[in-house]
Length: 54
Image 1 (tube, rainbow, N blue to C red):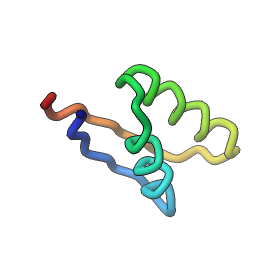
Image 2 (image 1 turned 60 degrees about the horizontal axis):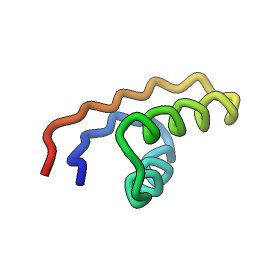
Image 3 (image 1 turned 180 degrees about the vertical axis):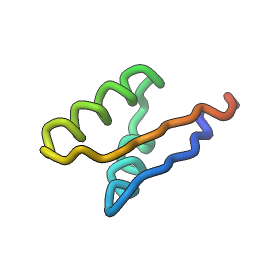
């Protein structure tokens, strides 16, 4: 499982929590989050920092 730290604005936190709940790899997670932000039409700063693996 990943332990990640998110810096998000507005209500993107729930979106990130949703992605974290899925059994995806780190790369797929970042790709989907990037696509979601692009499709939302918002230019929001999003930083995902991988802290450690369990």
